[in-house]
Length: 345
Image (tube, rainbow, N blue to C red):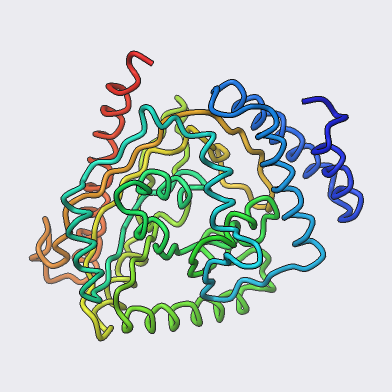
C-alpha cells in the first residue's frame, strides 16, 4: 500500500489535527504497513477490504480526538451510533487463522451457560496475552456461545482506555476499569486519584455481582504474559491479593458465584512488548495465526493443596498458586494442541 492511498491521507490528516508525536506517527505507520501485509498475505481478504478496515479505524480515532468518550468505572459497550463492538471483531478477524483455531472445554461452557441463566455469576481467572483478547474470545465462541462472547465483562487496566490506538476496541466491550499495581504510582501526583477510582470500580462490581447473571474476566497477573529470554511465552505469576479480593467480593454478594480457570494462547496475532513500558504507546506487530482457549473445570475455592493451613497468608498464597497451576497446565496443553493443528499447515 503506497502513501498515495486514502488511508495514508487520513493518517496524515490525523497527525496534523491532533499534533501526534513523532513516536506515535512511526508506530501508526508501521502498524498499518504490517497489518496490510499480514492480511493480504493470509489470503483471507483483499487490498480494498484492508483499506476499508483501516480507513474506518482512522476515522474512529480522529472522531474521538474531537469528541472523546470518557470511560467510567463501569463501561457498557457502545453499539450506537457507532458499533464499536462489531468493528473490533471485524478488525481482529483477518488476523485469525480460523482453520486451526480452537477452544476446549465445551462441557464447562455448557455448565457456565446454565449458571448464568440461573442468575448466578461466573468469574474467569485467566492469563492475558494481547490487547485484543476480548475480540479473539468472541471469534472463538461466535458459533456455539455468541451470547457469552458478547456479554463478558472484562477487568481492564488503564492502558486500553488511554492509548488512542486501543480505545476504539475498548469502547466496544463491557469493562470494569481499574488502575493496575504496575501503573498506579505513575505519575506519583495521581496516585490518590487512581486509588479512589479503583475504590469506585470495586463498589460497582459489588453491585453487579449482587444483581447476578454476570460473567467477569480478570487476569490476576495484572497484565499480559511476556516472552522470556528465549522468546517463549509462559503464564505470568498471579497476584494472591487480586485473587483474594475477587473471592471476598463474591462471598459478600447476594448471588452465588463460580470460579473457572481460563487459559489463552493468543500472543502471536498481536504480541505485547518484551517488557512493560512506562509511557503509553507501544508498537503493534500483527501476524496471521491461530488462537486457542481452554475453559477448565470449576475451581473448588475451599479445597485445594495447602488449604488446611491455619496461617491465613499461606492459605491465600496456596489458593493463588493452585489456580495459577491450573491455568498454566491448560496453557501447556494448548501449546500441544497448537502444534498438532498446525503441523501440516
